[in-house]
Figure (tube, rainbow, N blue to C red):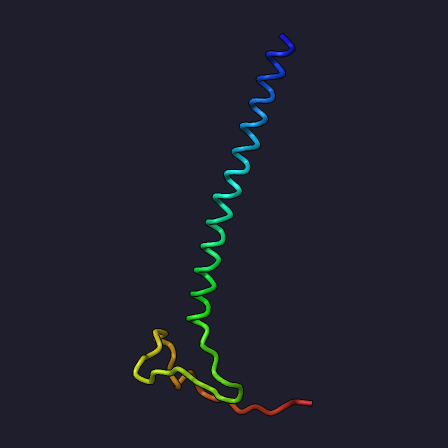
Length: 83
């Protein structure tokens, strides 16, 4: 009976360790692929101009979506300080 339990335990342990190894190999490859694709993507999107050059992307044709964005926001009230 002891030999039977020992064999079952060893077989289970070997299966457990082999699955662990296979998952590490499989997910390690996936992680490397995703990391490489993310690095390629960030290299393509990260255009940095030289120091001292300023680029402003502004389209004057686009209007602000905020309807309250007008220059007439109220009257200016001049005040005097009371001491």
